Picture 1 (cartoon, rainbow, N blue to C red):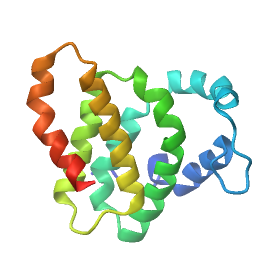
Picture 2 (cartoon, one colour):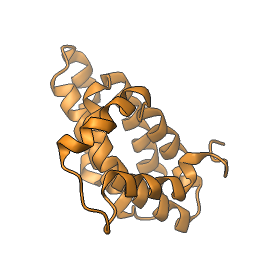
Picture 3 (tube, rainbow, N blue to C red):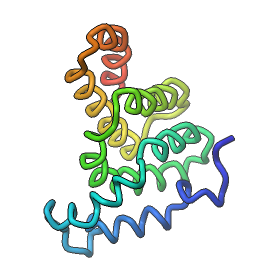
Amino acid sequence: MLYRPENPIFNARYWNLLKSLNGTEGNVKALDGKQLNIWLTPLLNRVPLAPVVVVFLAAYNGLDERRRQELSSSMSTCLSVFWPISAPKMTAETLQECYGALLCVLSSSSSSLDAGISKLGYMISASYRHSLTNSSNKKKVCSVLPDLLYCEALL
């Protein structure tokens, strides 16, 4: 099992700290894109977000309901700032891993999805769709298109 209490991915304190640093916290003045890119882009070049997202999504259904909502809300708020900066650097295969983990969550979820996971799912599927649109391998696009459309309908 991927969930371990000591894993920082599953600790809401770290996500809340990140929210306060990147200006998405309600009491902190939001940073404009240029200020954010000065310190954030070099960090994102060293810390890949895709493995963090894949591990979180793989363990999502194994978390209790309260923890799921808390983590997905904090994580999606942070990733709404980080994802647009890091997603263009991800390969189609990396985004496919994230998308596959998202499909696993959608297919095995026993309850309705909370807003945080829906927001995260929208970011992943939009990035993956954009990647496939720009892909030179059109055969790959045709093979995953039905799954992509199904996921979009669920979100």
